[in-house]
Image (cartoon, rainbow, N blue to C red):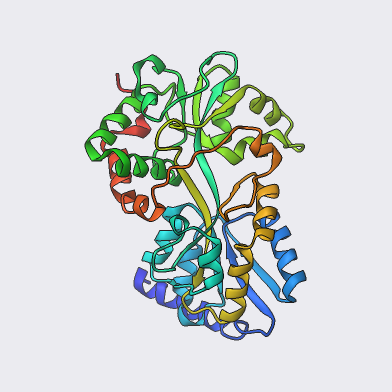
Amino acid sequence: MNSLARTSLLAALLAATASTAAVADGEVNIYSYRQPTLIQPLLDAFTAETGIKTNVIFASEGLEERIAAEGANSPADVLLTVDIGRLDGAKQAGITQPVVSEVVANDIPAAFRDPEGHWIGLTSRARIVYASKDRVAQDTITYEELADPKWKGKICTRSGQHVYTIGLVASMIANKGSEEAEKWLVGLRDNLARKPSGNDRSQVQGIMNGECDLALGNTYYMGAMMTNEKEPEQKEWAASAKILFPNAGDRGSHVNISGVVMAKHAPNKDNALKLVEFLTTGKAQKIYAEANFEYPVTPGVEPSSLVKSWGELKADSLPLSDVAKFRKEASELVDKVAFDEGPQS
């Protein structure tokens, strides 16, 4: 069976199983890349307030493809995901529809919304620098400084093709231009202590083990490690590092988002809209902030006390829709400079 036939068969099977269960009064169907434990407090609060039951399908990958294969018979009402790349990717894949809501427009700043309403940011996280408490005396840094030869052999990061890294590279292109971004990426590559690998937490482990003095990572991982009772060794990793907010003295730190899209064929559209609007409220934003160590995007809602203890975040004000335009170029640039092969000089 060729690939086209397999795709058609998959779509037919999914449509057959989905069509009978798609529409239900008082329900909303959620496809989610966000861990169930992270979003359950929000969904419980939503149900308590509205009486609408939430049905969640969680997966680590492939949900956009699933929605596309299910087509008009998809039971999906909303997709919860992270990173502007994935949110904009869902829009480009044609599986979303615009959300028209005065509530959302009032709650979420324009920089965190698609200009056409196809995606909506719910929380933000900064791409910051973890620094060794023992070996790094300075308390300020810029992204540009990461290419300074003084850090040669002292920086750890995850793969250049990971969405978090692509987002940062895209922001450098948007802010500095393609030529300067390439020079910066080459400099960063040659300052790496090892080939890019692992996740953000393992970069902090590298700091504790003395493999590197600096590492790139998202803010919320520090909170997750500091409070990890199941894997207490991660508390030790976190204790070895401090957070530096890059470019705090000029444009601010690159931020990315978690967010939501409404599925193109949402069978429970009214309930889906109620869920989206609920997630932008101060109440929901506060739950997000306390449970996930992320920054609320609704003005006036404070981050958790733990997150505030890291210092003030000055976020780059460049709209994420502008950053998203350069993601393809960023991915190509990562390959062009062979970033994932590690230092070359």
